[in-house]
Amino acid sequence: MRWLRRKASTKGGNWEEWWNARTEAMRVILGPMDDMVVHAVIPFDFGFEAGGLADVISFSGYLDGIVHATSELIGRDAQIPNDLGNYELMICFRKRDEWGPNLLSRLAYYTRDARLNPRETMELGSFSPEGSTLAGFLFYKFATFRVRDRNAGLLPCLGITQAEMEACMGGKTDHVIQRLKEAGIYPYTDFERPSVI
Image 1: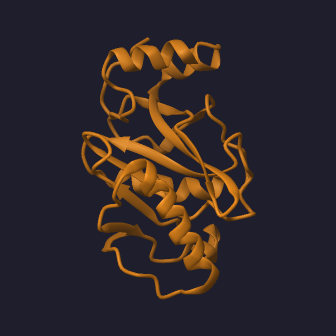
Image 2: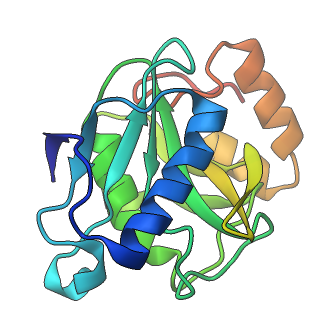
């Protein structure tokens, strides 16, 4: 993965139509897209086994920090739709970080094998950064919209601790989200923080 200055696509055809439609839909919600794209050296269409990864775009004007989102999934029939329809993954940080875009670019393929829905959790396992207190992600509903007559949405990945994940799995997701909001953590993924539970 490498940061590249955004430029007009030269791929043309259907790929460009979907890219433009999905990025425009996200721009309406998140504001102007940053000029830099985390670009996969090997394209997503080549497949995970070949080293392909999803491109990730960023929005630094939506909140006090930065929002990263995949920009490869809406419009792909291979993705298993969730309650939002076709969706892109999203993560929020207080400052620019490479871990988030790199993980999202890999996690994009998982959406072809499993349905990730709001209010569900996922363990990070070995993908958790060294020294981090985070054990997993909590997915939540953020935005729904239409892209080229297709139901679509943004599915944020919020980093949570082991205790928070266990509380969510025990049916206390609303309580966890409320505590994260009260602590000023939500919607950010902070690597080194105490649990709110």
